Structure formats: structure tokens, C-alpha cells
Length: 293
Ligand code: FAD
View 1 (spheres, rainbow, N blue to C red):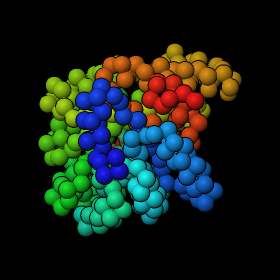
View 2: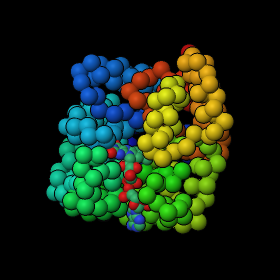
View 3: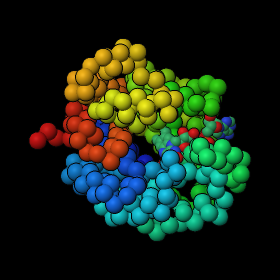
View 4: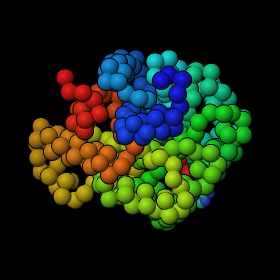
């Protein structure tokens, strides 16, 4: 399995009528956070995950930390290196791609990223202006597999779902083999994305990215940051419950959403761990992707 790409794993599972299970991590900010990360990683390995991914540069985090985490994870499990290009040069991006490759990475999630708050002009200043240009660069210079982002609730800068779907088609034509979605909270928005994408001729597998709602305030904050909306009835229940009750409500909702997505034909689930295993594995177990123990 270690030598396989994400696209190969998805096709293999699809032939067997099975689903993939994968998890996203972010680089730790300090040594104590690092301990938590590796504990969670071990738990994910024990759960027989198919692949993992590691974020890059989000919130101003240090790229060297992403590379170090990817380097270690890729020895044990197929690992997607996220790569953003906002504010980057072509040569600089290519150098990071080569370092991913040397670490054993077979698949890169090619992303634009967002301008940091302290430098809103970063996008204009960089040489690469969009994920599409990054995909072209990676496929011109390497044989690495490329994945991309998709947005069931529409990218915040995009005029419409149809526009996003056309961009996804351009990315597929440039070499993208799969997409992973931004967090979202309704099966309908995933199904709308699938149909808009199919309409635009983008038929690459789209893996739902799911964030387990174990800490309602944290998820509400992340949803706001990414432009995803939590359904009003859920938000009202989460906000009127105490902490323990709201965890039960949130996890129950997340498990039902995951199960419905798989039933609706999603090729697998990519669970955002926030570097903690408890809720992520509870979700994976709840939808039947990990044997209960
Ligand atoms: P792009 O594809 O460049 O799109 C940005 C906007 O431009 C969209 O509105 C799109 O419609 C428009 N656009 C793009 N190309 C064209 C075109 N040719 N014609 C017309 N319009 C176009 N951020 C991080 O900083 N680090 C991470 O590790 C990270 N991981 C992520 C993982 C996932 C699964 C997802 C869904 C997002 C992740 N992000 C991460 C966030 C991401 O970088 C932002 O959402 C960013 O705003 C958009 O990235 P993109 O790759 O979709 O950009």
C-alpha cells in the first residue's frame, strides 16, 4: 500500500465496493503539540487508515514543520503533502515539491492558499496566482499525482457553484486526479457539487472532508473562517446545550452526515483530526469504516 497513490487506492476500493478512510493533520506549533500529533498518528495507523494528509502554510505555520511531519509519516502510510502557492516563486514551489518527492510522497494537494492577514498583497506579489498554475508547474516537472480542493458550499471568492465546477474541470484537464472538499454540513451540498461537476465534465473522485463536531465552538469558528454554514437547527441545538450535551449532539450529527455521504456514493471520508484522535476515530467507527473494539 505504501507505494500506491491516492487515485490508485480509491480505484482499488471502488472496484471492491469499499470506501477509503483518511485523515488530515496539521504541523504542530511546538514540542508539546508534537507529542499529541504523534499519539494521534499512531492511533490512525492502528485504525488501518488508507492515507493521511498534512496541511501546509495554513495560518502562517512554518513550511519546514510540514516537511518534517510529511517526511516521518510517509515512511508508514501513503501521505499527501498539501502545498500552497500564494506569494511563492516557481523555483521555490518546485524545490518544495522535490523535497516532498524525496520524502516518499506520491501525491500532492495543489492549493492556492489565502493571503495572510498581515500581508493582504501576498497573492499579487507571488509568481503563481492560482492552484491551476501550481498544478501545471508540478505536472510539467514531475510525475507526482495531484489532488485539488473542492467546495460544496462554494469557494468564498467564487460567483457560483457552476463557476467552481468549471475551475475543477480545468484542474482535471491539467492533471488533477482527485479532489478533497472543504468542511461542510449537508449531504445536499455535496450532491449539488457532484452534479455541477459532472455537468462541467469533471468526473474525478471527490472525497468529502469532514470535521467531527466534538467541540462546537471550535467547529463554528472554523466553519466561519472557511465560509461553510452550519444548518440553523443544528446551530441552535449546539448553542443551547451545555458542553457535554453539545458534544453528543455534534458527534451524532457528524456520524449521520458521514454515513449518508457514503450511502450517497462518496468514495470515502477524509476526516480533519485537528491532531486529536478521539473524535476523529469515533466518527470513523460510527460510520463503519473502522471495526468497533
Ligand atoms: P484556486 O483554485 O486558485 O481558487 C481560488 C479562487 O479563484 C476560487 O474562487 C476559484 O473559483 C477562482 N479561480 C481559480 N482558477 C480560476 C480560473 N482559471 N478562472 C476563473 N476563476 C478561477 N490552505 C492552506 O493555507 N494550507 C493548506 O494546507 C490547505 N489545505 C486545504 C485542504 C482542503 C481539502 C481544502 C478544501 C482547502 C485547503 N486550504 C488550505 C484552503 C485553500 O487554500 C483556500 O480555500 C483557498 O482560498 C483556495 O484554494 P484553491 O486551491 O481552491 O484555489
